[in-house]
Image (cartoon, rainbow, N blue to C red; front, side, top):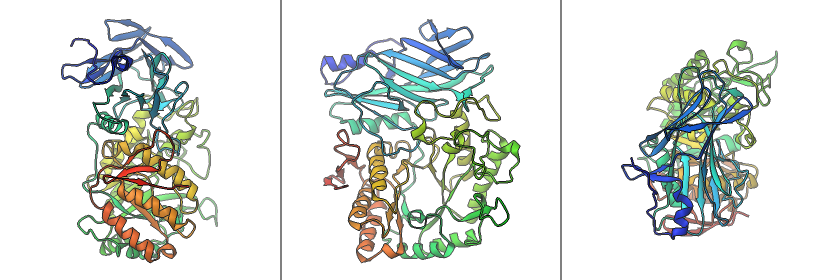
Length: 556
């Protein structure tokens, strides 16, 4: 393979020079990241620079990094047989235009904060970063399913990729094995391709084998009007009400039962309980198999919500994850995902759901239960320092991937899986859907506007590239003005992404039913991917391209 600059674009020579230092052409003509100018490794609190040799090998004492071309990616392989390894950092020289804007992803769900940034220094861009100036768009990322947690930093004269290899809050102990930490890829926009289209194409490059639903997904969910105060009777009532609005019976919608159905384990005599046994229903539901059959008779497909790593209040201490900040509440003990017995319990729950006949499972809280943090708190590190799981030989990314793949194996082909609070880049190719943002609301319009619209705008490029992107529900209740929810309903229904509605019976008047009927018919069919047209200027785009026409929304 010969090194040479890979720039085949119609932009000016100056724009080409901006990105040419980073790529060379492989034998198949794909752009490949060039070997970095610097490679660093962190063991404990200490960073050391590795010395280059043979063009693709870097080492310092017994820590080594080897680079190898894997198809269209630059594979990063790490060894550290004697020292704990916290991270590896690759650095390339890179002159960034002053006019450039930058778009990164989020660790797991987004929190209404995704945007094109104008000041890059100091910002962590999880998983990938898109750099756009007046002349060109360049994309840098790692392939999905990496064995490290990755983020990019763009500075005035360089670009950096950090591969976090911690295990819990300490460095991983690799022993004699070599860790395939990540595959790094890059791409430039094609001639005439805008930044949105380039980002969408790049997402497809990062995930070579996405797991996509066979048909567009839509349906209902009770959370945003019941908020856990649900019952079998309420589920049957709302399912029957909404099933009357379905017109496409070749693609039936889902009725997803959210939190509130499982058995509570009391903490003290007379206590209502805090933790759930997600293999058994409580007295409000009694027979989940019968309820699932009833949902099917009404014309929908049954689904349910669960929390995989939730432990019982009387759990054996040997099965629990260590107590750390954010994960120390005795009312909410968490299972250690590195213990095989716990994985077997989670898989047993999915076996039960298959026996009940459920066709969708939404699982939640796994990132928080593993890290003790939400994504917006992962500013300096993935989790708190100085703790580890039962197995310290695996990175956090490997631990998470094992959990996800175990869920996938148990779910089989008969259950669609939605990951909520999952590490986005690690769930791609494993689950059919991802809840891509924090909760919308059935009470507060500002929350829906912030979390819903922002999430959908900046993560739609991932739709059917990583998974089907679930922007969360329309909380159609009496607490939110219909003129506001009507717009959110329209955007979801025409975006091409999944549509879920939490329809409070008291809020479902004739006008609302007519609009939902139209929205269901749209969401049941394959549509062009919606595109936010003003996403570079605002966190909450108001101008969208939907089904070939421009639509203006008034989110205020």
